[in-house]
Image 1 (cartoon, rainbow, N blue to C red):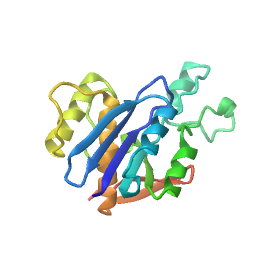
Image 2: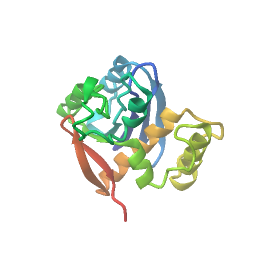
Image 3: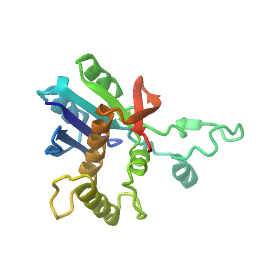
Length: 199
């Protein structure tokens, strides 16, 4: 039996990272929250079906504290990254954190299939984006209902944590990757960044 694992990686241990495991029959085997990198390592080191798994790990935002509100707000978009009049002090244009990148490469050496994905791009590609503010309670409820209705996941009626729902997006993406319905959109720290193929 093959398993599809999604990990919604947070930028630091103060925020929860979600993990979700789907099997071939679209059953949700496990949903959990992890905080420290040691927790994530413990999970994968003790996951007995690592060789039969496809893993998708989200790219974590680099939340390095910067000076100036405009730098913090503008960082995800890199609008002035090429402007020579605005130097890249303190690496403020770095969009993604390298948290856990070395460890995920070791999973590949242990016969697991590991890819990275950009969460918001994948949500758009899969039709899981709402018109609500990202990670708000309305956005969380929308994502949970859409995963339940359109993707047939057996989810409870009460609201689940957003990190777990985002991990389910990664698990669904890894299932689509097994079917050959994904494309490579880039690379991050020697691992492919994939997204769903739009039909």
